[in-house]
Length: 282
Length: 260
Ligand SMILES: Nc1ncnc2c1ncn2[C@@H]1O[C@H](COP(=O)(O)OP(=O)(O)OP(=O)(O)O)[C@@H](O)[C@H]1O
Ligand SMILES: [Mg+2]
Image 1 (cartoon, rainbow over the protein chains, first blue to last red):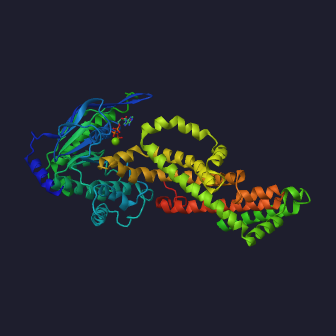
Image 2 (image 1 turned 30 degrees about the vertical axis):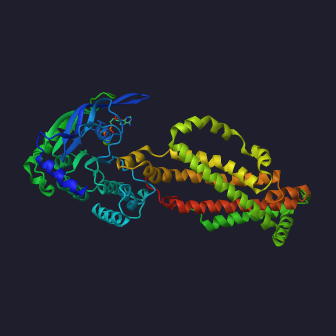
Image 3 (image 1 turned 180 degrees about the horizontal axis):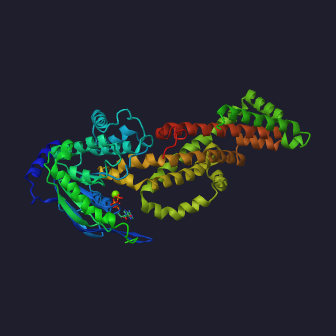
């Protein structure tokens, strides 16, 4: 694992606009058949994510963002088009990705330590190694003192942090993150954002990141995909001209950042205003 | 206002004294003593059995049968439940047969088991095991089937093998159901053992019961019933203690302050 990380970084460094896509949505569409009718969650989505790239997804609630992540994870087949991972159509569970889902999905019968240890146990790491790694991660996400607490005894944000620690524990090459920091306070959120950017930069992780926070969408991203309301399709892909090793603490003073968030606001505002006179359903 | 535990226990004791006292007084006055006996006579008989060692001998036999049958049926039920829970095809094939057997009152098999296994303890153990098997099996099966698909998917994405999924998700999530089945089975385990003894035996609490009834010894019948009730209580406590140990995450769940 560790030695391929360096390789990956090289390939990312060499990666320009012509890099082969790691994740590619090609005319992707997903419709859910329900007894009450068909819900078209996403339609004609075209997006390529290069290796080592950080892409954020923003769009109105229910526009199919989580659906896209689920498709990359291989939870269900596409209804139209396809999702390719390293050029191969995703079929069944995609084990190259780590997925931090919108709801935390911790194991209720395991305490914080036990939950974070799950992926390490699956990888067959030694007890000592697991203990050490879990402890470091607990400190990282600020759950020290709650090692022995069960999920029902944690707050919503703490559960999210536990899920994040679990995701980071097993070091997948691609991270799918669905509103991972939504439930965190400002300081903690900034700390986590810095951590995840660092991870992406140092280890060349590819990240597909859903958020409702436009500031976050710009601050973290190399590119940001803006979705229309359901059936979700990409309205625009915005390049974020901030350096890879940007200083998140000082972004607020960066003109490009301020302009870009304003631009995103303008992009999404019509769909907010449109809500008032939007007919229900479709 | 919340009523404290001591008050509740005091009220329970008062109720018990009232019932037993009422029984003692009513016996021979309101009801024929031959039919209802009375607490003092029952205690006397029971105490006589304790002194002669008869009670322990027969109770020991019944406990052995019930516990052995419980363990055997419980194990088989769990294993079958897990297997069929994970193998959809097998479950589909076996479904009508299982339903058929399930609808059969297992106790009706007792005469057949007497033919096959004689009137010794093994016949009661097998009868008990048969009764317990279905309860534990159905609960385990439901538990395994109800495992959260999301959790399984999350583990699969982490690269989990079938064995990992089984030990880390399926079994822990089914364990609540398994214990529900086990708790439900305790009285049935005793039914199995005692009905077996009533039908054909020369030892065990069921035999003691039938023997006392045969001699029109009403106090003896009640004393045997009392012993059976106490036995059931002990078995229930044992399962509860086991459950407490097996599910640490459920501990304090009932007394936990609610938060949504
Ligand atoms: N498993 C499912 N079965 C049926 N419909 C579904 C399923 N998953 C999602 N949908 C529908 O697909 C649409 C998109 O859902 P999705 O979860 O992808 O939205 P989202 O963009 O993540 O929204 P949010 O920002 O609120 O999380 C919704 O209308 C939802 O009702
Ligand atoms: Mg979502």
